[in-house]
Image 1 (cartoon, helix red, strand yellow):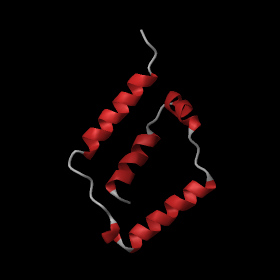
Image 2 (cartoon, helix red, strand yellow; image 1 turned 60 degrees about the vertical axis):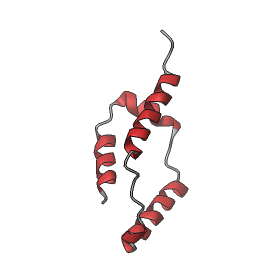
Image 3 (cartoon, helix red, strand yellow; image 1 turned 120 degrees about the vertical axis):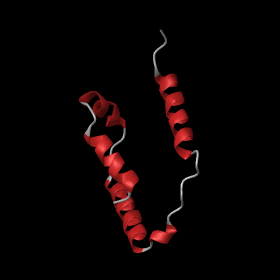
Image 4 (cartoon, helix red, strand yellow; image 1 turned 90 degrees about the vertical axis):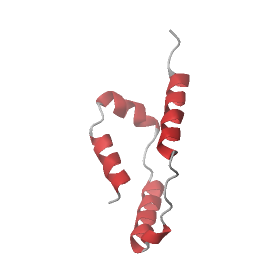
Length: 76
């Protein structure tokens, strides 16, 4: 399993019930699971199709997540 997938699995396993409740908006449909499995099989068959992350990808992702959380947070 790729390192990112391993990290994500550990992160999801450490979630609290409050975190899980917030995720109820997103559910894994059978179609989504099938698509993810298809993509994983495709990658395992040909790892050369992987596209590396841009150097600042995770910083941009972190900033986007913080911005989204700030928009959802109640005003104090």
